[in-house]
Amino acid sequence: MANTNHTQNQQQLDQCGLIHERRSAHYKPNIWSYDFVQSLTTKFSGKTYEDQVEKLKSRFMQYLSCVPESSKPYIVENIRKLGLANMFHMEIKLVLDSIFFNLNNNNNAGRFEEDDDDMLATIALQFRLLRHYGYSVSYDVFVDYIDKVNLLLKQTPYSKRNSRGILELFEASHLAVEEDEELMMIKAKAFSYHASHDQLPCHWKTMWFDVRQQIHAYEVDDNHNNILLELARLNFNIVQAIHLQDLKEMSRWWKSLGLIENISFTRDRLVESFLWTVGVACESQHSLLRKCLTKVVLFVLVLDDAYDIYGSFEELEYFTKIVERWNYGDQDGEQLPDCLKLCFEALATTCHQIAFDILNEKGWNYDIVIDFLKMAWADFCKALLQEAWWYKKRHIPSLEDYLKCAWITSSGSLLSLIAFLCTADGKSEDLKNKWEDSQHLIYYTSLVIRLLNDQGTSDAEFERGDAYSSILCYMEEENVAEAIARKHIKEMIVSAWSKINMELLRASSEQQAFVNLVINTARVCHFIYQKGDGFSVQDGHTKNKIKLLLIQPIQL
Image (cartoon, rainbow, N blue to C red; front, side, top):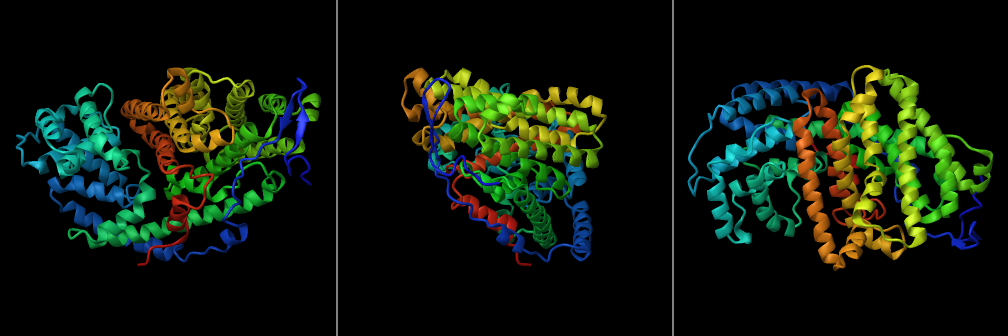
């Protein structure tokens, strides 16, 4: 269909007689062409490589059975860093069960000496691993260390806070909850140094995004295990091959949908969107989840740009009503430009595809799934409309009012819903209650996503006159400079993470997989927005990560 509504900046009168001018974000064209993506190939698929993995896995399990207990926490950490946790999940559980038992029975008791850095490092690593996997281990395991560590932090210059024990304690402190007051204080002291060096804690990182770097680091470790190293390299290439297959399928779907060719106001970011889903769910068994998430992320970008940049407020009101009803009313349809009609038609078609795909794999009732999706998109569009209203009125809301909408427009709840529908177990009738039980977790991860997004994109959005950010709202409300506002937003992110940690501890063993997927949505955003807007700007660290994770295999 010819695109006649948005190929140039246009002016029109809205219902109030005011001129509305189509704006442009001046996004750069997509750098990953359809032909390029379809031309990508890999040899690391098929039974031959899978058989090699099984042989290596069997040999490493024999080795693991002979390793002394004191070494196993470090082996588990290496397994995780090398991207093999999914392969050894039962072995990891056995190790952690043993560590948990020993800590609870004070079998690791020891006196902290000023030069006894190894003991502190071991306790901190054990604590971090247990908390990461949802074990309710108390920070009391540090009771013999707290006073000494506080004294050490007080006496040691920032530049020398790099001992193994202090570094592990820094990492462990990011799994603290609000009740862990002394551990939170240590985190604040240690964080001031590491944050100034742009260093993210492991708990906030997307493990798969660092896996190649970790494999290379393990290669030069004098104590590396050759079997584990070979297994990590081969596993990476096999998983990359699965991701590439998924990406090529999504590229064909995106092209056949025919939407992006008929709208010019939005970002064409298929490959970046797919990379985002790999960060959330890299495991080979999550192919359906990656594909459904890719579709949702793409439509989040389209609608975000439609509400922020393209549509007049009146058009957006009509569009929101259509999404709420999930069909056109005669009058509403007439008020929309063709490109927004196309957006809704493509959204509806895609949601029905997602519902059928989930039905085929999970067996959920189709009507229940599509109702979930309709409700989530309606909530998303209503929140976007509220932000558009603030922009139209040039009203800067309070930070509290802003966040009531912004946690929804972060798209965190939409993305978490897809993860839920693709991974939940049980009966279709139980889905609603299970979904409602996870709302605290989803709120706080969505809050982190929004605040990280604002930190990374607020300057560019303010320049082009988009809706306001949390930074600007806080500056206006408190009459403070931007630097102070940014510091406050960082503190809010840290606080939200402590709430996320509590939800991680509250989750049952059956919920852990879903909970980790939801938390991964926040972890990916730490990467995407760490150096600006990793979605809109393609020629930076996002581009390099795409090459390393999706295109270039590791040489064996």
